[in-house]
Length: 77
Image 1: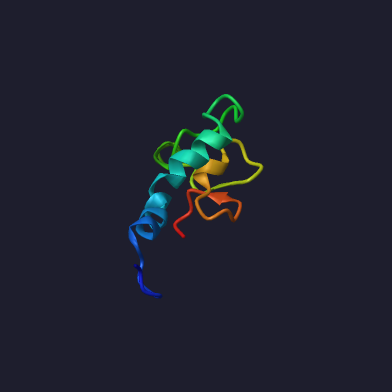
Image 2: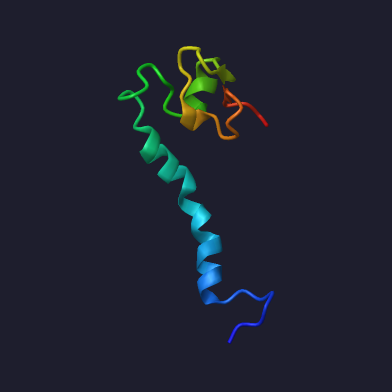
């Protein structure tokens, strides 16, 4: 029996499912080059080409680069 306020084993499992969210988000959005031609593979590539941060609507932008969903990919915060 689990007392109120304490997490049981099933609750603990649910809380830790967030670990795969980034990869799941990427699978839903599609691989680079298929749905997003010209998009950077990752932020390291954008930074190496001197294009970071990249804004929505600019060449190179893709949703997987925008971690916080504010329309600017590869930004510091």
